Length: 425
Ligand SMILES: [Zn+2]
Image (cartoon, rainbow, N blue to C red; front, side):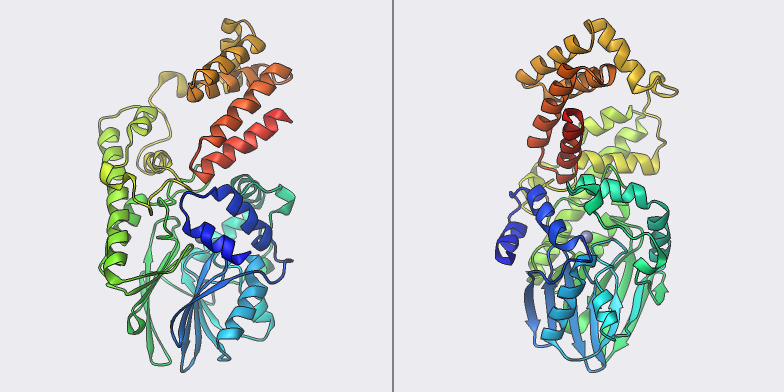
């Protein structure tokens, strides 16, 4: 259903959990075949392919085809088909904007079909691939939570043969001349430490990878490695200054118009800048981490910005990433320096409340009064103190599910929902 998916991708109010599930079902497994895609033509030799969820830039030159990104493992058949439909020229160069599963794993069928492109990525991409193998179990698990899939259904690379490794890497900037066309690769940190954004000046195209895809920037993710909000804000300002007429984002719809493109990057830089500013100020005042996070707010002028909605990540998670990067892990509370386990704390609190079932009753009451955040603490204590208590399990499942339903952020919603399922199981 590509049209429905297209409409859904362009609608910031849609339930992205449903979309993510549909996409992962289609694209998350290399054994799946051809699926729907959309083609956005820029001129007779330049296209943006929207594979759902990932976009691919396709540039035909006199020497062959240049691809920026390749999609998911499950996109390989679709990418082969889509590229062949557009051009019969050989594949000359492939650029990975970063090594994520949805950008650097869709090339396999083109390679099997005899193409031998050089593959260029930032020098941190091979190290990322090595890390993926070391942490395969963890990554398969957190992706199954984030995209609400059974862990057995999540494909994750585990051996060297599962990757199509870069054949060349670069450090800061790399300018390529291919068939009379210039491609300028810039490194910047943002969602990842291995990101590349590409400018094709002769075609006025900016392919920005995941530096922009029409949602609040993904630089907080609670389950993943360090993100780089400060560097991301600087890159957004650089991209605003490019003056490109066409923007190929990593996901979501193609954007056109130099003024609009400049605006959306400046808005993104301002959004990140505000969160960065607030977090540093509070960190310098040595506030406890929870108070820093609770006080973070998006400026009024950006709150309704259609491209900055927290439908994937959240400002609070971005503040957490900043604290992790620039501060230590200690929260600021004596009890949390060398703490009792949460289970021990929960048993103590449940004891005060009259046992896990009584505490679960308090949690249910808090939820009924609309105090969902506190209800979540109480429900979790009840569950930890009474893992076999049917009432504690039922209330915890219910409270976690209510939190999921109230969450705009896919990351937060998915975590609450996974915990609701496990509490209710
Ligand atoms: Zn992506």
